[in-house]
Length: 237
Image (cartoon, rainbow, N blue to C red; front, side, top):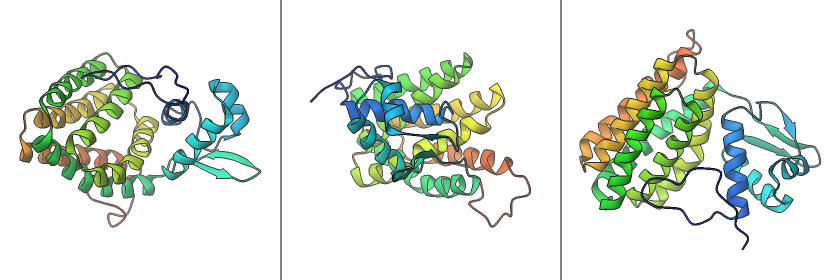
């Protein structure tokens, strides 16, 4: 199997195995969509993306199929690929689902994480707050993705991990799209760091509570984008 260098930095706690071409294509396309380099509503093709990434069309096609399952693109046969729009109602549904799954994963990770994983999570907490302090938004989003993966691995519940994995990128893109102020970045970073630190320290209830506070902040942030939204539409923070 061919391998390429990962577009993301090596996560704390040790290097990943070199990604496959499909994984590399997915990682790069996911970041381009989340950070709006591929704007909502834009139409692209497998051939164009293949040339842009320098990766063959088959890995790109497989990556796009995964992105379609994650609600980031819509593949239209014989017409191309459309990047989906940023949708408030979708975000609220995503967060309503994530609130339950993230709490479960945080609690399980606090109970089951191994010593190297706890050390890596503590470093991630520090790295996320430092990225926010430096106003490094893209770096923060990459660390956010690493945190999600690290928590899912430490929880050792593949069913929960697979269920929530498809929701993370949608939530990150919504936040990136509507983010306006540096203090919002720092607030979000601290809430993420609180989850990571509680898990690193093995405090199950604290990890669950920290996860709930993070989701409450994200729900509040989402609802604030449309102040007149009916309270019955989506979860309440």
